[in-house]
Length: 387
Image (cartoon, rainbow, N blue to C red; front, side, top):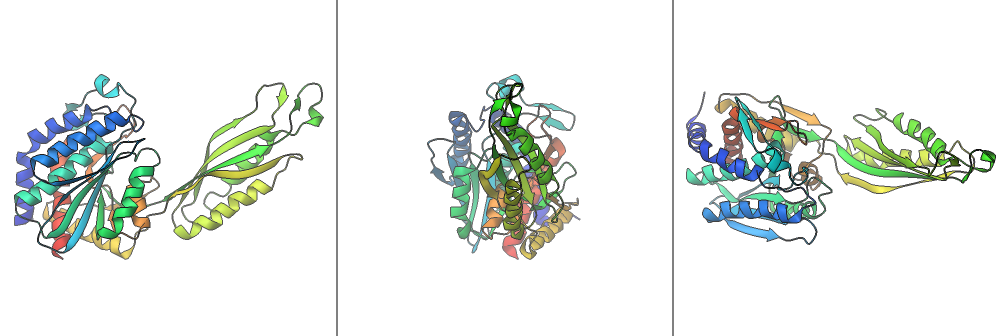
């Protein structure tokens, strides 16, 4: 049954729905792929204007190459410190927002970036606002961190999150809720590697015996890499891009594979990388050799620790107060939650409105989820701070 705090939060948010939708339409109209710094900064300026109208503290963390990150904060009379996290950038090329403006049909809201992550940004602002408006601020600090390069390598925003993590007690990441409404309590870690094979060029018709086929060597190694799948709990290896050769009538002297690796446990990183390097040494084609390179381990796993399990329990209790239910799930995708979990911060993810089909023309959020999910976020903050 809806409790007084829950009822007040939901009622206030319901009153704001027309404004929320108008503002989400404005955000979805901003062209802000990660590669377009002016657009990402435009989205950031929009967020700053919103926060400025409420008199909140704003810190801008500039970057020369990607969109600036923001930290929007309010203070209360408590001792606990909570961080909300979302991102300003999208994946859509310039012109997409103009060609496909936000539209609503029945209970479905379509728009580029609507789920990933503009509704998350907006719901973060509204969750903070409703707590302030109703006088529910038992925090020392409540912040919304907005990153500018999440959709690529999170070079700038990831460094900022690592810097900020020791100053907070929990983090709530505002990626959209799963399509079935689940929140996210665990994420696999991610590594990106390359396997480069060197061979020996030769004329494929005249003297192929003088060559050493790098592509053939790489093909054997790709098969060996894929046999590692499942050899450790949750381990997933995928060779997603291959390159090699210069002409059909030439024995190729070079080839490369790009390898995506997902692990569920941090302790698996070292042995999995060792297994990849061992495969590179086991060439079956005489005259070829291979080396491993690439970006290495980009995101640590987010384990469902006891602290995270406690946050899940609070979130489920809050959902019950709001007259619905939620479950938590593990996923193979990565987000800012991985970075923060790697710093030892208890994290929950998937706390934005329910949505899906990210990065596609059908990206959506469910209209009827906006108020309950934003209320859940606000009530979770309140109940956690009061605990």
